[in-house]
Every structure is written in structure tokens, then in C-alpha cells.
Length: 73
Image (cartoon, rainbow, N blue to C red):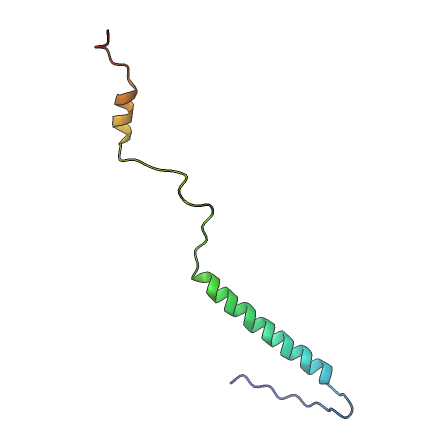
């Protein structure tokens, strides 16, 4: 349950400020943990992902294509 006991006084104001700071800190911590859990399941992508296209040509085939054709002319 993670409950905490805080003795505060509305009449004298004793520990009221400290209590609200503690509640704010716990809420912030819980919010940060929730955001970290969400971000673990999301993969980041930079750019559109369509800048590089690879075709099915093997490196050997490309090397053969770049050699001059000796049967020319």
C-alpha cells in the first residue's frame, strides 16, 4: 500500500508544508517512472526510413557490370 503517516496540524500549520512537498515529490516520481516504462516499449526512428533502397543485386554482379564490355565496336 505504501502509505505514510504524517502528523500535521491545520491549526498551527505544523508539518503542512513538508507534507505537501512530500506528496508532490511522490507524484512526480510516479509520473517519471510511468513515462520511463512507456518509453521502453517505443522504438525511436530518425527520419522517414526510406532514404536507402537496396536492390537484390549481389556485390559480385555489380563488379561484373562495371567492367567494360570487350565486344564493343
